[in-house]
Image (cartoon, rainbow, N blue to C red; front, top):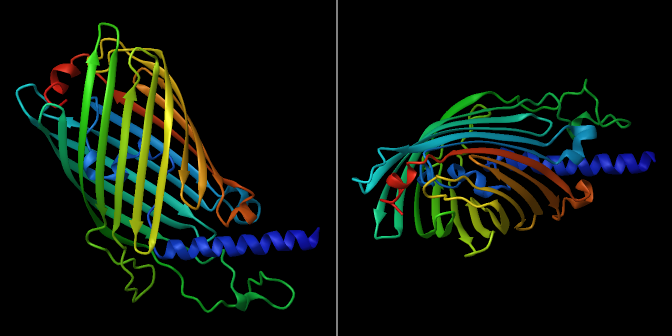
Length: 356
């Protein structure tokens, strides 16, 4: 039993050391519910949705299987609010404006990042069924960490790994704040078949986000010259309501690239519309339940469930880890929940028809 516990502990130390190294190279946070975090995919998604006001909260707790000895390796959350300004049938364009606050704490060193951004986009009708958007976002990024709970080889006294009295010879982290600037573009093609009691929607949207244009220095230590690498994010998502049925298909494909790291997420949700509604006019609301499955390359399978209740949506998912970390994680990855509010007013059709 002692050998097994020691083995598990050493595996955990190795895993968290790798996670620590990745965080020191300052790669961005990610969520499995990629459709629920559009402003993290591209600033061009700001205000680019069917509705007036959208607000969401997402929380992710990853690598809880390491919790016994090391605490939760990742705790990540994001709060987002966005909407459209100056929508009118007389205009072929309007503005989107939004706000995000993203929080992340990782590993025994409590590497903590807070990112606060203001998002602005310009959205314009192109053709009868197309909409084009370009957006920017900017704000501040704050980082901090502590060496207090970390252990190094110099602290092994021959009998115990954790010898607090031994000096590790490392410098402590310090808190720092930098600026963050991002850019994005998006295009959506859609068509709507409206009946008196329901709408059938088909849409395809592609977006691109370029993040950390200014490549701010990650100044954890004096003299640091490491700059945040730019992240490229491509996203393709769609909605297809099967005509004269209560079923909808919501597929998505996301590709992230940052420095030498890359990641792809692919999958889909199937929804059953328990009560159909006129989504474009808002005269009748829609309730639906959906189940889905995603795959994040070389990392995890992610089953998801979603419940739409009028203007509110509740989403839950779980990562089943299938990467090389599964020896220590035992296939347990992370739990993620989300709540979304989308104000779909009855007069939306008058505003939306100009852009859809």
